[in-house]
Image (cartoon, one colour):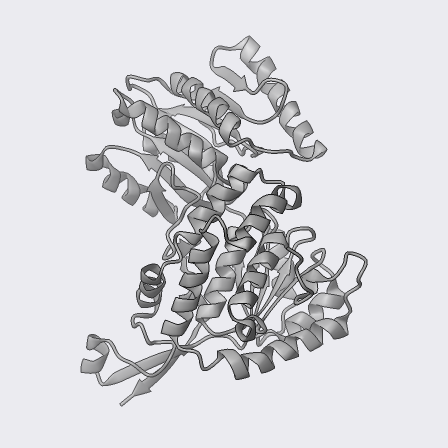
Length: 453
């Protein structure tokens, strides 16, 4: 497959972007939106998105085949990692789920199309509709592709023209998805632009921001602050900054045949997108007092990661990343030799996976790429006390607990500040309706228009 030059990201590496090119691209997107996108209905958009997602799930779909053939070299993710990640994403984009998302966040299935009212609104003789931004600009991070793909989907639902600025070298999958959209509906795809350059290029970004109605950005807190500072006052800003996640396992589930399932689920959270997303666990807290002790659980997790490396290998990492992992391994190897309260298991002759057990329950940031900590705690309160340093920065906690204790655990985590609690094994697979950083992903994009009758 040879991809035609439909988008700026299709230009050859030696091509140079100019401020005028960016400005003209934005103005073209706005014109195309008025002509081809603004009048589309929600059912039409839901149908198109869901059918496109179904295509991406088919083994013989050319764009999927191209992604899996060339993706490992372009993204650094192994073939199996791409299969797992893309399948999990596109399986969520069903008609039912897309319809549920609109109703869940906007209150009515036709809120994006016309003035409408829920039963409660009708009794008050009120109605409302919402409108999306004219030009939605996404400043995408380069860690994993799913957040960028989801941003595009949400922009399509709001009928916004979109300009997606990818990090240098991170446009492969967003660009490929844009081409699949072009094949499905060329007029619709003409309302979307994909480009890539190194962040902070003021010459290119100032004209982009000047044309934008709303800017979303994903990245470090410093990056978000820098972007927001440069936006015109009239431009809305939605920032998704640095977040961390962890797992929590109660003693009650660590007995009998269920232990194997818990170990597998924990391993799946570690290997999904090589642990690089904000929803991936840095560590897993394991309660003491169960049939399986925390250090025994860590050993079983290491065995499971070793098995996964055969079927779903991590893939290559940069020399710098490998050196960081090796250096941290050396640190814990010395510590383990001096104290039984630290143990380490790791892949032989590679940095593919690492498990570190520590009795010290202080929250520890992982260097990722399948490097996971297991920490022993007596209770959730103890774990949260030791995690106080990252309070307010925790996105997701994956829990493994008995049914009669899960609700109390979730309530406690929510009150502490966690914005998403899910079953262990599903940390990197949020539902379409999840609230990103505690905010409605679709609802935050739109403006409301009320009609008082």
